[in-house]
Image 1 (cartoon, rainbow, N blue to C red):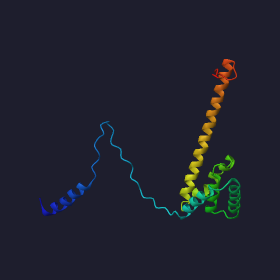
Image 2 (tube, one colour):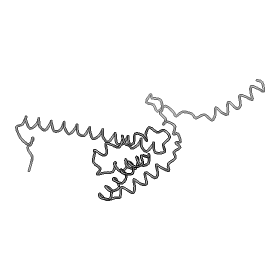
Image 3 (spheres, rainbow, N blue to C red):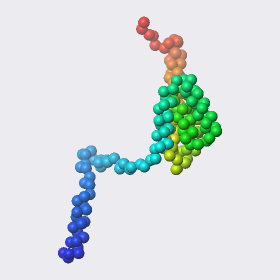
Image 4 (tube, one colour):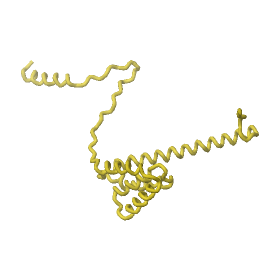
Length: 170
């Protein structure tokens, strides 16, 4: 073996020793699964952190204070249609006790923020939109289940000729 080849072989062997060895077969015939690599996500959180701190504060408001804050945020959004104002108002609309009609506006309200690829608030807006869409899907599913339950109760009543279905113990 020449010196040149051995000079290339030694670093190659050293590098080969640094390669991770896959885990042993678990015995179920499936290849071992490894979690996908975690990529570091670089996020400028200044605006998002401010929005979340604001949300933590407004959660503490009483009903009348919250109504005033929602009205003030709505007026500020009408005056200045910034991404921060959109997110602020959308956060207020996601608080418990907000009418469902208002909650349904959140994805529409955040749509310009979710489209903007350079927005610092895009990630938060995407999260809020996905959350609201999932909540709406679950509510629709629950309504469908309630309708099926009501139909079954009606069927049971008609079959038994009783108002309450099965007899109840007192």
